[in-house]
Length: 219
Image (cartoon, rainbow, N blue to C red):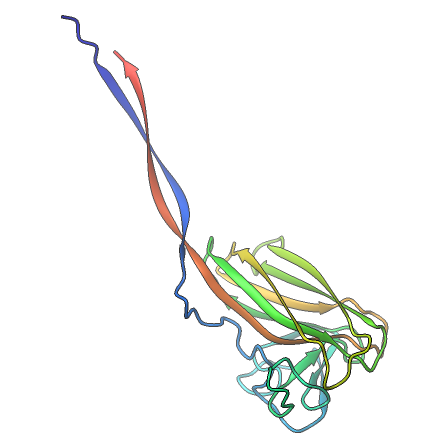
């Protein structure tokens, strides 16, 4: 009899799948509610001379441009208890448009969620508050995410701010990632977007998988 022999050509290819993160994954943003240095002062304006520290209103945050207001008791923060005590937030327009950021460690290829609450300074124009939110690897030339947000503050008051949650996901491309919030209201002495409860959580990590491709070849 005649026997035909087959030779297997095997190629191993490295693929990636995502494995879920623990449900209790910690918030990677520090002082995301801006309450580390809470005080009874109605509000306080900070500019680029502010030096991040482990305490103070803007602990762990950097003011990249312009200035911002920390709001202590002028209006309710996004905490659901409606108690203005120990419930701070940020107005992204102090005297001019401000930009704040925080850098945190990430795993290249891992998936993360970003969430935050927004409202607006109802007491100053314009009615429509706008900001850009950018996620970028610190050593990478291009942003991973650039999102624009608008909030209508018409009819709002200090006890009815209308806080709403916003969220998105991204896949990290660097071991250090910077999250920034920048007002796009550039006229002076304007009321900006109000920001509170910033969180970043690990959703899934990349898991390498080896796939074997077999193609028969006659000899």
